[in-house]
Length: 338
Image (cartoon, rainbow, N blue to C red; front, side, top):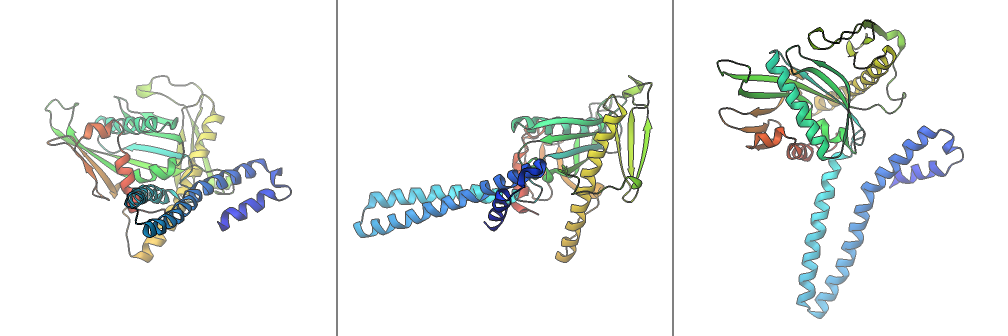
């Protein structure tokens, strides 16, 4: 309540709308806070009314009223449980859009096909939630599949939901590309970063950047452009590298690459803070490629299992068709807003 009161005072202050972008950001923040607070205020009113009804039922010994009260209590507790889950989406960046990347592991076509399967899975999940996906950059394999893809995903709490997906995803199956029908294990790394909303959050010194340009081209050398429109930006202090070649102009590719770089730097800051917290807790988080979070087994049996929560389902096809909400919900329940 204190935070909403503070923002409301800012809104009513003189000159608040002089900075339209900042004003819109504050209005959105206030709306999100009210959406979190208002259900609990309503629960309080409903529970106070039920206390009055309980007193009345006790005085009048009305069994019918007692049954109605019990039914109403159960209904309120169901609603409270639903709102409690939303607490897991109250992190500082959870309400934002997400920058989402998938990178195939070693293994050529088999791994690249797995990366494409994962992208299809997340695309279907996004469609179910009416989220919008915008592909920022993609590198396709020469024989097929995806080497890496970076997308922007817009929707309510996109980052809050998808932060559960970062880590290594493992696939075990009979390879459709193996003439001997041998069983293969493939890996793909998923990165999830909150979208940066303004320049204040991440400060990038132009002198810290190395910018290279090169000719963009498709798989197998197809659609190679004569002009150097593709851009690779290296952030020297962190060593983070971002490439973009999807757009037709060098300027557009540079703009997108800077957007991805900003989100990666913000996520790096978040990771560093979380590492400090985990050190204090005595916990350890593995490095990216060592952090295997989920296995998708299609042979000799079918099962998808999350190694962090233990949550698993046997209908692997349904999961690969976008039914991943159960995994996300279970992760969020066990990891309340970090």
